[in-house]
Image 1 (cartoon, helix red, strand yellow):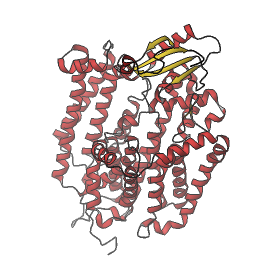
Image 2 (image 1 turned 30 degrees about the vertical axis):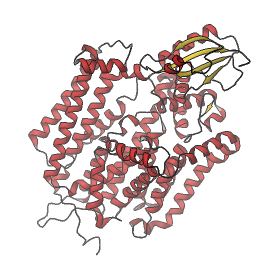
Image 3 (image 1 turned 60 degrees about the vertical axis):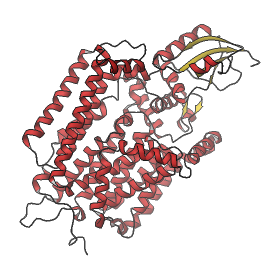
Image 4 (image 1 turned 30 degrees about the horizontal axis):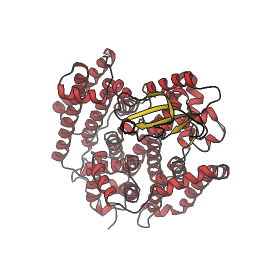
Amino acid sequence: MSPITRSTPARLTASATAKLPRLVLLGLSLAYILAGLFMRDPWKTDDAVGLATMITALREGGTTWLWPQVGQLAYAEEGPLITWAGAICMQLFGPWLGDITAGRLPNLLWFAITTGSVWYGTYLVGRRTEAQPLALPFGGEPSSRDYGRMLADAALLLLLATVGILQRTHETSVVPAIMAWQALAFYALARTLDRPTSGAITLGVSLAAAFLTRGWVGALPIMLAALVAFHPRGALWARRQWLPLAIGVTAVLTLAWWIPASQGSEYWISNWKTWNLSSFSWPSLSDFGRTVRDLPWYLWPTWPLALLAVWRWREWLYAPHIWFALGLAAFAALELVFLEEPTDAEFIMLAVPCAVLGAFSLPTLRRGVVNTLDWFAVMCFSLTLATAWLGWVALHFGWPAQISRNIARQTTGYEPSISWVAFAIALVITLAWAALVVWRLRSHPSALWRGTVLSASGLTATWILLVLLWQPAVDYARSYRDMSAELNTALAQHRKPDECVRGLSVGSGQRASLLIFDNLTLSYDSKCPLVLQQTTRERLRDGNAAYSDGATELWRGGRQADRHEIFRLLRVNRSQ
């Protein structure tokens, strides 16, 4: 049966594809990414480590551009691409914005690549013949252009509504970058259908960038999905002669880094290989159980829609609008099974394909089901906004008492103060959400994007409220700024000229924070007379911490909000 005569599961009228105002989509996207990106301290661990590799490359120069480092710590994980992007931004804009703010500017680029690729990629496959809704007996079905645009809007909005990616897209880590390259690969596959030269080149760039961002852990599922996209039964099989061009571009860009990097530092490359190999393992029942438990919450609300799309379009499985996204999702999911300890850094590889697939499920839903999803979004996000306000009231006014006590345990020593500017903006955001709900109740819009707008707007409004009302308390609980300043003061008092400080059991996130805030670099030289030890209060109490005897404690401190972690600055004898 040809694609023209085969029945399609999509049923839609022209009114359901009414155009979503571009300012709404652009404004919502900007509000999503800008809120919480700037004017805050780095969070441990990935957020701080990413910034620290950029700062090290900028200050140290030379080989630290090839091999990312956190001070003297060889951060031989993932790849150098985000270090390059952040260090360049720091060099260009750091004198005006400061290094921390400038280092976060690439997040805007990653977000733009992600959203632009999702929108245009979905539009390109959505306007094709295979994806079109069933023609109505008396006409009235949407045009292919309007239909593709509606699907593209829905895919982008579903991505913004995905709960798990919210914090990660605001971190200076490889996570938002690898999502961007996966989205670009999806767009490149769609573009290859009608413009094979530019599509193949873009595909090669995206695959190489994925490798330079996160090594084989990030690149392998995208590469395999790209190969499978050229399946003999798929639309790209007719363009298979362009696949060598994509492979060639990938190889050239990858080798341009790999050759000088491998010849320069055998130690770094050896550790990089070890990290990539050790990341994979045979399936573990316990890890698989944790993944099955966490993944549905992370991908809410797109994963049920994505599964529904695959089922409803099962007769069109090899059509580009299903096959491309399905391949990306399948290999990202398969990788989770063979990873040593899969986390949300790998879960994010499912966000883009699930959002795209979820968009193609919408035209197959009955109106009653769509309305149910709308009401669920209204109730769910009205509750999250109310919870954000309730927590703020408990933090500042001590009511409800139980919630206030729980917050106090997590923010020991914090003295809250009300920012009336933040309060006013938060109130405006809340009223805007209320106005959106009223619009949905009164106007009964027929546009199919209405539910996705509610979900994306609700999650964005919740995030903005958390940033406005909670960011000072979160910074206090998660930032090492005060601890780093105290340590810097102690070193100024006790360190003699030319004395180095060795780190003992200090984590990469803590090392990164010390470097970012006070340019403190911890050495690995065992001859250093000063030792910064990271341990726990319990180990100190039981006398199980190293150097419990025979060393002079010069300083002790840590984050007041952390009831377990403690740092000690010690002076040890040369014999020790």
